[in-house]
Length: 434
Figure 1 (spheres, helix red, strand yellow):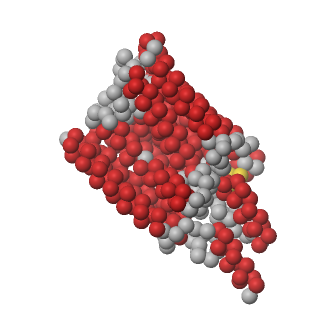
Figure 2 (spheres, one colour):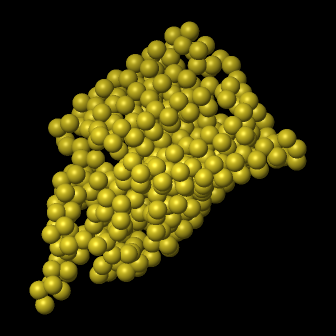
Figure 3 (tube, helix red, strand yellow):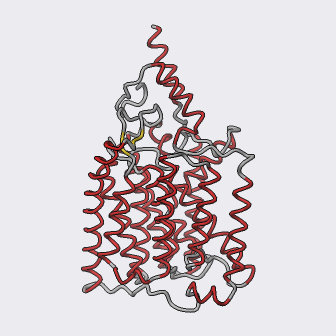
């Protein structure tokens, strides 16, 4: 394929390639849903209503007691050199091994039952590839938690994370099989977020009280919906979404270790182990994809992990820690939104204008793009640790400087050219005519 020499060339005829481009244009390239301006306000209105209603309901005393807001969630203190050290090692190894093994099973099952991604120009793979990678990721995460911190299952926050991840994985699986409407996916995510809120898994950037509860509920809704779907649309190149999720979960686990939150460390390493085992099957050239089931589940799990963390600094600065820990997908979503608005395109229609596409089009090979993004996310995670470790004024200065650096990087990425599948088709047509 001209200009994309790092990729194996899909064996598609000119007619097939033309039909593929038309189909991808109509369906949002298969990776991102088409959400028109007419359909957007309805699910958003319902989602906001759920958030406000949940915030008001949470002020009711029985709801407060149920969510455990007046008690202490059993997130054990971390003490290295004994119990926790062995648990961390055992849980991490269990997560990687389970993910590796179930990845092999997922590949065989996917081929046998026909749950595969068919070759399309934008996907850049030459043969049908199974999309049951969620099996591997979920198996790894489950094994890591069960081996590393089985007593931590008594945590309401962990229970909310597990329930939410399973629900989002199920939603994604239905989407992989049948194709759900964007409205259905958004509403389902809002409902799952509300369940997580009631169970005590919340973004808390504003003071408690009537208005504060509403603001925190809205922020929780934005956080879960935004981060979950940011990881979903970031799954557009072999290893990209899982690689960044690996860096994010390691960053949050490191933050939890610094602040002695044992169960959060174990859960973070369990997610990291699940991603690492899956990446053995997904790194270029991929033999297994996670599909929407894996991407939505993984995105929700990382978002939940960020809210399980008890920030060592007071609000609202404390909320900057999970934001930095998932900064790359957030940055990518912001960049794509601005780019499409500048080009007078519908923001929610899919395209090949993400960070991965721009970096590759700028000369990065596929095997270089994912490590680059992984290191970028680890760097942001390191900045989060700095914010958590220095005095409050220095923490704010770090956040501001990181934001300025992010703005300059955004301007740089907006100047990088997008990858245009149509130009590849035109080049092939010219070669054929000559």
